[in-house]
Amino acid sequence: MEFIQKHKKKIIVGLIALIILVIAVTVLLFQSIATRINYSREQIIEIAENQVGGKVTEIDVEHEIFNTYYELTMIDDNHHEVEVVIDASDGTIVEIDYDD
Image (tube, rainbow, N blue to C red; front, side, top):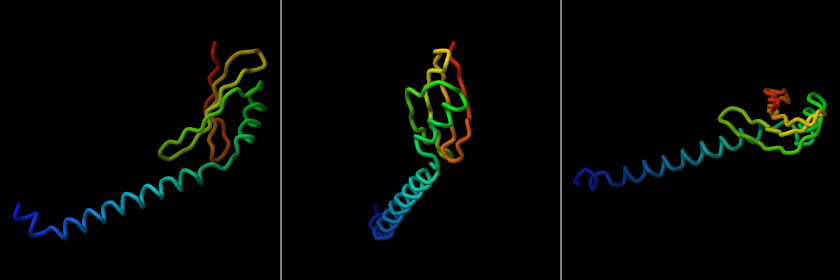
Protein backbone atom coordinates (compact mmCIF):
# COMPACT_ATOMS: atom_id res chain seq x y z
CA MET A 1 0.00 0.00 0.00
CA GLU A 2 2.83 2.39 0.75
CA PHE A 3 4.20 1.85 -2.74
CA ILE A 4 0.86 2.79 -4.32
CA GLN A 5 0.47 5.88 -2.14
CA LYS A 6 4.05 6.95 -2.79
CA HIS A 7 3.81 6.52 -6.59
CA LYS A 8 0.15 7.38 -7.08
CA LYS A 9 0.78 10.22 -9.55
CA LYS A 10 3.18 8.12 -11.65
CA ILE A 11 0.69 5.25 -11.75
CA ILE A 12 -2.14 7.53 -12.85
CA VAL A 13 0.00 9.20 -15.53
CA GLY A 14 1.11 5.77 -16.76
CA LEU A 15 -2.48 4.51 -16.98
CA ILE A 16 -3.59 7.63 -18.85
CA ALA A 17 -0.68 7.21 -21.29
CA LEU A 18 -1.63 3.56 -21.80
CA ILE A 19 -5.27 4.47 -22.49
CA ILE A 20 -4.20 7.12 -25.01
CA LEU A 21 -1.90 4.61 -26.72
CA VAL A 22 -4.69 2.00 -26.98
CA ILE A 23 -7.06 4.59 -28.46
CA ALA A 24 -4.45 5.74 -30.99
CA VAL A 25 -3.67 2.18 -32.11
CA THR A 26 -7.39 1.42 -32.47
CA VAL A 27 -7.94 4.52 -34.63
CA LEU A 28 -4.97 3.59 -36.83
CA LEU A 29 -6.25 0.04 -37.26
CA PHE A 30 -9.70 1.26 -38.33
CA GLN A 31 -8.13 3.73 -40.76
CA SER A 32 -5.95 1.03 -42.31
CA ILE A 33 -8.97 -1.29 -42.67
CA ALA A 34 -10.97 1.44 -44.41
CA THR A 35 -8.16 2.18 -46.87
CA ARG A 36 -7.88 -1.47 -47.93
CA ILE A 37 -11.19 -1.36 -49.78
CA ASN A 38 -10.35 -0.19 -53.28
CA TYR A 39 -13.36 -1.72 -55.05
CA SER A 40 -17.02 -0.87 -54.61
CA ARG A 41 -19.67 -3.54 -54.12
CA GLU A 42 -20.83 -2.94 -57.68
CA GLN A 43 -17.32 -3.51 -59.06
CA ILE A 44 -16.91 -6.68 -57.00
CA ILE A 45 -20.28 -8.01 -58.21
CA GLU A 46 -19.22 -7.32 -61.81
CA ILE A 47 -15.91 -9.16 -61.29
CA ALA A 48 -17.63 -12.19 -59.76
CA GLU A 49 -20.42 -12.39 -62.33
CA ASN A 50 -17.96 -12.04 -65.24
CA GLN A 51 -15.52 -14.64 -63.88
CA VAL A 52 -17.94 -17.21 -62.45
CA GLY A 53 -21.13 -16.58 -64.40
CA GLY A 54 -24.53 -16.31 -62.80
CA LYS A 55 -25.88 -13.78 -60.31
CA VAL A 56 -24.74 -12.61 -56.89
CA THR A 57 -27.42 -13.21 -54.25
CA GLU A 58 -25.53 -12.05 -51.15
CA ILE A 59 -22.41 -10.01 -50.41
CA ASP A 60 -20.60 -9.41 -47.12
CA VAL A 61 -17.37 -7.67 -46.15
CA GLU A 62 -14.96 -9.62 -43.95
CA HIS A 63 -12.24 -7.64 -42.15
CA GLU A 64 -9.19 -9.58 -41.05
CA ILE A 65 -6.07 -8.24 -39.40
CA PHE A 66 -4.13 -7.50 -42.60
CA ASN A 67 -6.72 -8.00 -45.34
CA THR A 68 -10.30 -7.17 -46.20
CA TYR A 69 -12.37 -9.49 -48.37
CA TYR A 70 -15.73 -9.52 -50.04
CA GLU A 71 -17.54 -12.82 -49.49
CA LEU A 72 -20.21 -13.46 -52.11
CA THR A 73 -22.88 -16.10 -52.53
CA MET A 74 -23.93 -16.67 -56.12
CA ILE A 75 -26.21 -18.84 -58.18
CA ASP A 76 -24.26 -19.87 -61.29
CA ASP A 77 -25.65 -20.40 -64.78
CA ASN A 78 -26.30 -24.08 -63.92
CA HIS A 79 -28.37 -23.06 -60.87
CA HIS A 80 -25.72 -24.22 -58.36
CA GLU A 81 -24.74 -22.20 -55.31
CA VAL A 82 -21.21 -20.80 -55.45
CA GLU A 83 -19.23 -19.10 -52.68
CA VAL A 84 -16.67 -16.56 -53.94
CA VAL A 85 -14.06 -14.63 -51.93
CA ILE A 86 -12.51 -11.53 -53.51
CA ASP A 87 -9.68 -9.40 -52.13
CA ALA A 88 -11.11 -5.90 -51.55
CA SER A 89 -7.78 -4.19 -52.14
CA ASP A 90 -6.93 -5.54 -55.60
CA GLY A 91 -10.07 -7.29 -56.87
CA THR A 92 -8.49 -10.72 -57.26
CA ILE A 93 -10.58 -13.81 -56.70
CA VAL A 94 -9.06 -15.63 -53.74
CA GLU A 95 -11.41 -18.61 -53.58
CA ILE A 96 -14.29 -20.17 -55.49
CA ASP A 97 -16.26 -22.92 -53.78
CA TYR A 98 -18.87 -24.75 -55.85
CA ASP A 99 -21.52 -26.42 -53.69
CA ASP A 100 -22.55 -29.80 -55.02
